[in-house]
Image 1: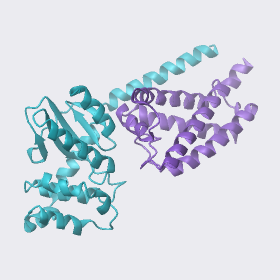
Image 2: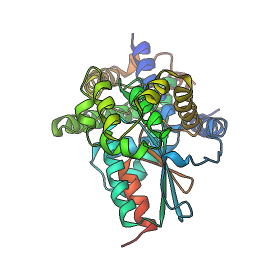
Image 3: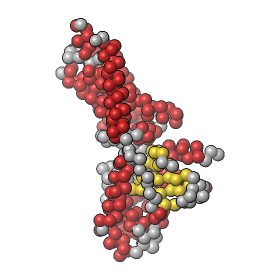
Image 4: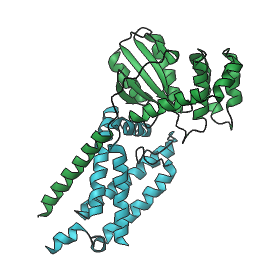
Length: 202
Length: 145
């Protein structure tokens, strides 16, 4: 065998290996059902966005700010839903912030709490425990404290968060924010802006 | 010792590339965007092509096939990473992880900068001592044939 022949063979094997790996590891096509409590906008909108979020992720805070402005400008054209993807190995408060958010959702206060939580992220992210801050926010938005306490210690809210994260992993997500815009995966706020401009050219 | 170094350098690229190639390319695109050096079209192109370059460089270094060229490729790549990370750190860009190994390994940019700088020096050493580097390589087999 000549050297160039082996070289070509190696290239083919590598391409085949990667192609095979991609087929085996391809994210399954999953219909993501919308959870109304964490959705905003027009359910019949032509642009449907599912965001997988970590509430301690700075890029997520920026992306959420952008999306809120965008939703305000296109209230009938966009439907947004938030799903949990806490990056617990990077962000110490990822799970607790998701828990408070899910407990707020169960009282119909998800967006009200998120309106406080995300803009103040840089402050509470540096605390050893952000719970006093979250409790103050919960009180401010009118959450029932007894129901909140029950929710925080129950397994249900945690299971919801973990199930959504598992869904995200199966879809090939490994960072936040990750969006699915009409089913197409988009990672990061910059790509989000680029893709939305194609739907809404100025 | 040179064989071990060649295996290490090749493995770095192999692991790095597979972590990116076996995941949706959008994840690596997001990493590239954080460095803020390329235009949008350049970022998409880099996200789809770069991991393949890493893969071929890594495997060819590991196998010792076209070793001088593979090592030169590795040298260019490490040099590029050092410059890329350096400019990101100097500019104070908010990089939580360097993103260098896709989703498999999370390293802080500072750690990776040190690792890449050391790897750059080691690769240069391998290139300077090619006769030693090519021991137990496919190149040495074809040189004898």
